[in-house]
Length: 147
Image (cartoon, rainbow, N blue to C red):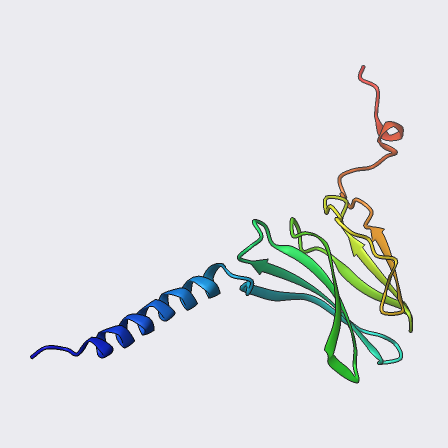
């Protein structure tokens, strides 16, 4: 039994299309990302939602931290800004007023961007003070001389 040439051509085209689609989706403009939520804060007016997320993407060597602002009436419309590389997840969000958001981060976190405003919301970045209970700047007052 011989297979007709048109059938062989059709199978070859299907195979080639399959290989091209697999290559396109693996290396093409469509990137694969996974997001893990860190913090969520709802504004006092309940109109805006702020989120910090860790994004791990195929095309990036390191995970990044995104700050997302959305309107609670339309959560599909999100304004996102990458603020740094995810060297730590010890960041916090605090609404100071209906249109002012504070992002607190440890001194070890390196910000790559500090937007002052996203979608009409003022953004303030504040480094957390170093908290080491064993560190006491007044230690010299408590030293007892030997002797």
